[in-house]
Amino acid sequence: MSSLPARRRELSVFLRNRQSGTYNLQYKMSRIRLLPETVASQVAAGEVVERPASVVKELIENSIDAGARKIDVIIRRGGISQVRVIDDGCGMDRDDALLSLERHATSKIRSAADLQAVATLGFRGEALPSIASVSRFRLTTREADAVAGTEIIVNGGKLETVRDGGEAPGTQVEVRSLFYNLPARRKFLRSENTESRNIEHQLHLQAIGHPQIGFSLLRDDRMLFQLPAAATLSDRIRDLYGVELLQRLVEITDTASPGIRLGGFIGQAGVSRQTRTQQLVFVNGRAIESSLITVGIREGYHTALMKGQYPITFLFLELDPAGVDVNVHPAKREVRFRDPNGVREAIVRCIQQTLEGGRARWQEKFRAPGGSPVVSGKAVPDLTLRPDIAAPEESHRELPHLTPRATDRVVAGANIAGVVDPGRGAKPEQAPSPASLKHDSHQQQFQIIGVLSKLYVLMENADGLVLVDQHAAHERVLFEELRRRMEEQGVPTQKLLLPQTFDVPPRDADWIERNLSVLQRMGIGIESFGPDTFKIDSVPSFLNVSDPVQFMRKVIDDLKSTGNSTSAMRLGEEMIATTVCRHAVKANDPLRYPEVEKLIRDLLDCDLPYCCPHGRPTMIQISLAELEKKFGRKI
Ligand code: ADP
Ligand code: MG
Image (cartoon, rainbow, N blue to C red; front, side, top):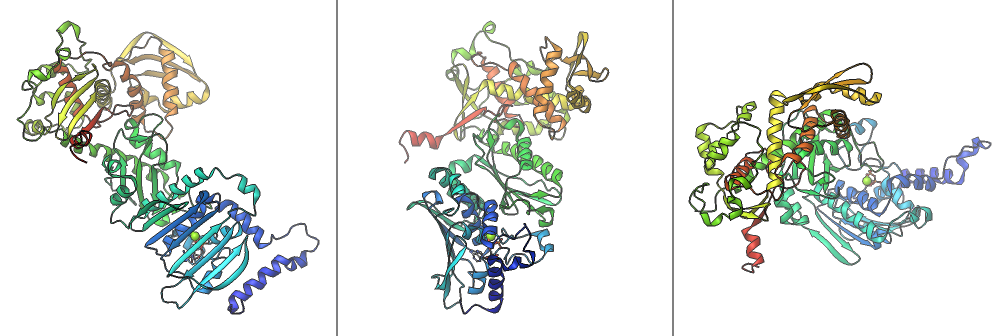
């Protein structure tokens, strides 16, 4: 230690005084004491180092900040017995290596002003000393052009050894026996398996956040993955999760919101997970957890997501570092946005547009199988029609339709022009002109093979076999038709014979007051009738409401639970979604061929054709490649 420069020596003397208590001399009688440095570090460690995965996170972040191109992680027994992170980054000289173990020593910020715009992953100068105070810690490091490197060993915060060492340029940190000196903490650790999985998740986050860096993870001598540096995010997703997942994602189309850029990939409508583990969100390259963003994502998906399911996202937000405060949480997991509403709205818009954009890709797939003649309803060979879909008039159930011309469409059957929806007037720029319809009719050819089990429509498209759930499909069609009406002229209402009044608790009353106009647009004739009392005199005519008061209470409960941040139109959508289900064609309802065909055409004309308003898929594609694999034609 004699070679330590003066700066270092001063620091050590200061610390020694502090630890021996001489620092407190002038306050002899005081009950308040400064904690010895090791204890202070252990206290801080409680916040930064929660579990082995936090060690891995902090060490990887340091490696990334050090400009590493490759990061190898080795863990044993869930990281409790050992975590080792090896990087090929810039390394440190001996002075810096020693200093890096002091609390609040960092090379990443210099002043409070720098805190306003942190561009690195680290900045608190807490991780290394915290980790070193609760483990057996070894750091070896070497700068690229240095003759020798440095090895430092610290046990439970006590500096044991400083000597020459360090092999390849870069830094290696080994953390053994985590929390060996804090038995209370150790008890809180979960099983080795769970801790390993947490570490794995952490590596996934970092690997997705930094595709240009190579990563590997060795768990108890077993290589879990080795990811080469990737050119693009999609390459990294493919390497980590496989090509099947990648195919179910859509690339985000940025909606150019002011001051924020969005990118990455999200699951197509109807693609979801039972847990949140694949909902990855990055703000300026940092993986974060944010309820604000979660709400935005959910609202963006809305009917494209099954209740209780979680979306898959690899969502990247880039904004001016000054617009985000990362100094909120010791583990830097949370951030605060200067303009939270702007961020949320940008996410909602971007997710909506991305999902609707993904529709073009689907429609493309519905072109007739390669080379076959244009197939229309009439041209479908009779052989492909099973008797039950050509059932006699009286045995079939007429598709409930909402527009008077819908029946014409059934008659028009083969003619795609029949799909022009009068309700589409709201978006005149999207209403296809007769010329473009002709074009569309080429684009949207498909061939119905038959109906399986009175529920699944079998179709052929360019990619292979498509199965459509006729009930889910009809739900989606009805849903979008009702929504269009609501947007245009409001929902048609039906007057009640006797208007009814009802009381609600004050908080509900407040909610109703605030949302009166929304409720009215949804076809509910409701007005204030004294404090906490309301009068209802009409209900949406497409509903079969027997007890209007009961209905109102249910609507309020349902809608309140969708959250305050939900926009007005979304509330209406929610109500429609919960009601269309009852009106849609039930499974087992036999449909005649033209009806099936109309249903499919209407479905393909929807904004989000591939899932019902509850987020369940409407169609499943089984590709020719999959069939070939199953039949052993291809390995
Ligand atoms: P912070 O990352 O917040 O600055 P740390 O305690 O994690 O605080 O690290 C302290 C300092 O040690 C960093 O600022 C950096 O200069 C240096 N350091 C840590 N890890 C590495 C590494 N793997 N390669 C190079 N330098 C490192
Ligand atoms: Mg750090």
